[in-house]
Length: 504
Ligand code: NAP
Image (cartoon, rainbow, N blue to C red; front, side, top):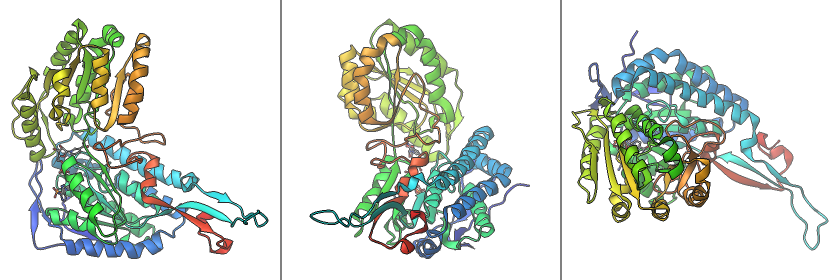
């Protein structure tokens, strides 16, 4: 049976409606009314989260792991309904939502295993040296402790894996932190259904009700109230640079500033070195076209820029990319706003000095078609606007005169989530010069592949220097992302019996 959302917020175990409503904007099916969030609801949710923290933060790792696994089970139990409403609301194909559901439950279970192992606590012990001269040393123990209630902003482009029970929520709950989610207006019914799954898991595991709340949006005041709430200790966010920066600034301006872990924009440059281009330029072009158009280009790791060196191989690469992209049909975007931003961004890029159209299209309402542009590196270097992300299936080829100019392009990039090298063995000398530059620019550097598709595992880094993220040394994907919601505490001379259970 199909899921019919009631449109309420989940605040500490109770479904609460508000008089004002906003309408969802599904690609298919009827629009539905959802209660608009309010600062008062945010306050209720945050107070309940703080109260829950005293209980939940003290639960054993085994109990928290069981809770995470139960959330995964409850999501799976609603799998078909989640796919149905998710596809209706976002226009993403069913196969994509099924895959994303697997990733979401997979990362919940990964975090359950991760906390059971206990390594993340990073426990250190410097035993007392009572006879040390000239001064004795106290007994010193350090370990990571949960920070308290965490705010999470659902992402438009990952209705499951970066939203209600997504990576930020999983990491925070694993750490021992209650979560208040601000649902994304692009998929409120999907958020409600996933919140139901968490609600069921709370009951099944006898967790405190305030450990999770969902406040739907429809009002910018919700996000403002959430990041400024005195009881919130950190924020997880995925979205635009402008929105993320506005919320980051609010966090920094609080009387007690808190960390804002924002995953923002990135053009994910690829550097195509001469020998690789000569050997397999055409297949790199086809791979790039596939990566650019996957999910209508609505991935933060979408490789929007290819940097090549001038010559016949670069011309053939451009032609092969154009041919491959022109075979890709129109795809539905996540929201009408995102589609409008794509059409505007594509038109603006095409109007920049020196930019040559290789493939342009008319985008109809929520439909997106690929664009391909080319520009000389000297024009690109002179115009910062050309290095900004256009969210959607748009590719820009930057043509350098020679290796030195390619290096200058690499050096001029701002922070990125990823940077890619396409290389053959004979490109090694040049790759050796590029790699130290790229590792200063990106959270993940890869060779001979495409950055779309982020493995959820121990080694993953999904972050990067600003403006790719405000993660500053952290990642928002993979087990290391738990560190965002922990803080080290040193226990000096504290008697054994008083130490937290995790100290042993
Ligand atoms: P967004 O506009 O940044 O919104 C994300 C979340 O932040 C929403 O819940 C939004 O609330 C809230 N928000 C944004 N600005 C705010 C502000 N000034 N004050 C309070 N809350 C604020 O991102 P989006 O809706 O996902 O997509 C819009 C654009 O973001 C896209 O066109 C694309 O350019 C970019 N984007 C980039 C990535 C990436 O990974 N690089 C991912 C997704 C989107 P409301 O719903 O109330 O606005």
